[in-house]
Length: 301
Image (cartoon, rainbow, N blue to C red; front, side, top):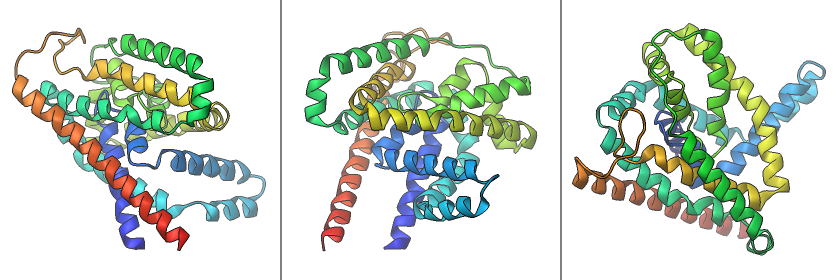
């Protein structure tokens, strides 16, 4: 059973890692769909608490490290790293060479994922806060829709300080559904350079990017967990709005300046891939529901 759980968590991490390679798809969205979003967020917060204690009280810090759910975290990290390192070049080629096909696939996945955060709300609380929650959803959707229309020319040799800052912002997509870290990198002209650095094992670039990502996570994880604990309904509706607005970046037919166009070439293939993306999400949700049911039965017995 433990081996199966490890493999499942590796697959979850791999899917999140794959999502982070694709402009317009959020790793946070995939974490929601695969049922690990809040658990990982909580574990990340505990890890940060332990790390904060490390300089002053190493014993207490290591004691807290031991309480972390490493059966969840380590396999997911391994899956993410394996997919990111092995598929960076492949995904860049797929996204660049087959833009209509790749966007159609991920459009279907994200569209079906919109039901996930709404389903995590408490119905009674949602009824009480519905006007404010809907307002938050609309504002988030409109803001994301317009922001995903911004693009920038690719930079072949970017300044490392800019790489650090961009990584700190882009990594928020790991914990914020609907916000694509890869799309942000594309918008600021760093997507191709980052994918090339991963594919070529450019350790200087990757080291700076990693430090920026750690900085971003430290600053953002606590805030997001606070919002989910204290303003859950509105936060989840805003997440839904972010995901809805991000669909603009995944519309299959658009020009190099991210201007939307009417359906055109490869229409049949795009529809097929859209349906495939939707089926993938439905299958993941069904598998997660079945897994949760088995866990509940095991706990009851």
